[in-house]
Length: 111
Picture 1 (tube, rainbow, N blue to C red):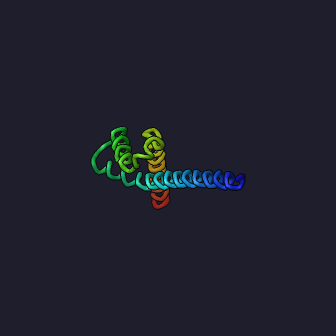
Picture 2: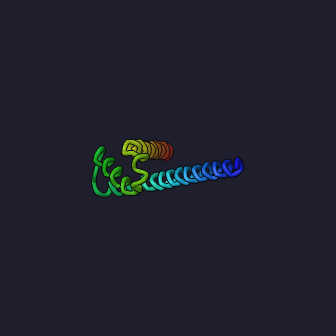
Picture 3: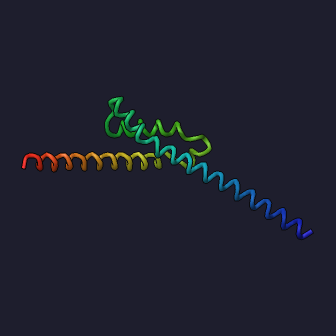
C-alpha cells in the first residue's frame, strides 16, 4: 500500500511540474513574440504620425492584443511599457550613433 501511495504522490508531483513547465514555456514564448513585434508596432505608429507618449500608448495597445487572456495578469501594461521604452531607447541610441558616424565620415572627406 505504501508503494501505491508513493507512486500516486510522484505522479501528481510530475503532473504539476509538467503543467508549470508548460505555463512558463508559454509565457516566455508569448514574451518573445511581443519583443519581436515591438519594432514593427513602433514603425506602424510612426507611419500613423503619432509622437511621444501617444505613439508609445498606441504601441502598447497593439501589443496587448497579442497577449492571450490567460497571460494578461502576468504580462501587464507596465511590463509592456518598460519593454517598449527600452526599444525606443535602443532605437534612439542607434540613430545617434549613425548621426555621429555620418558626421565623422563627412569630416574625414572634407579634411
